[in-house]
Length: 127
View 1 (spheres, helix red, strand yellow):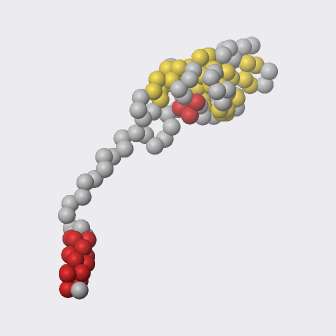
View 2: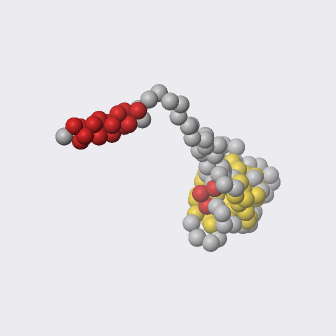
View 3: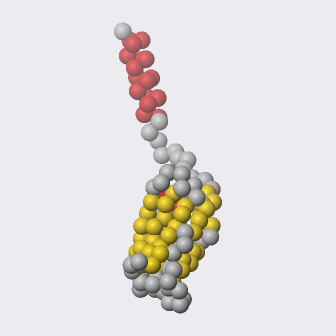
């Protein structure tokens, strides 16, 4: 019986030894951006004036998923983001009956994020 008690005491002591204040290895910090990278889209009229309230739609050519944004007072939207990556995206704008020509945006991806090429897009509404 003495042997059995000694054995359990040894196991308990070894478990207790694991609860020390020894330094711990820290995990590497995640250097990836928490926010999605966005494409800046500016919508202009045929005369070059920026168009407020234009609808901009980007569609992934492979999955057919899409994102729609509305331009602000400066005629700009950043609603289109890397959630549509990595496939090419078709971007078009419209305001009322005026529609822009479609533009193609490619996404260049690394291990963290995807960046649009071009990073800024200007769409001109047809008269």
